[in-house]
Image (tube, rainbow, N blue to C red):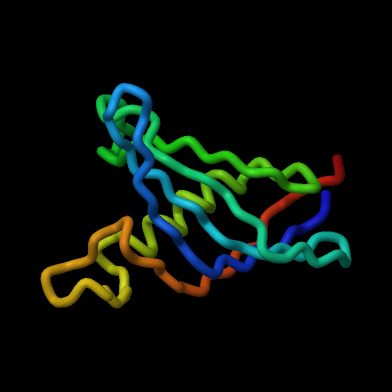
Length: 123
């Protein structure tokens, strides 16, 4: 098993309207990864809450994460959620362009650098 070095760069929250007229928050996460001597740049992962009624045992929402990596990495989805929580959580140090009233998630782009190394293997 090899190690994949992930470099997270940005979070792009967006609001998607479903056919029924109900919207949901979806986020795009921008990252690069170095795996077995090959650098893959400007990759995206999408994430969104699965269901507002479903929560983890510790009270956090459950997220679905979709991505396409050129290798297998089981821990990647969890790392995307951790990055999201780092950026949007109470300990975040983001700057809102919407002023002192707080950020409006679908009007901001959050640039926060974060790195994590995960076990991975070739497809």
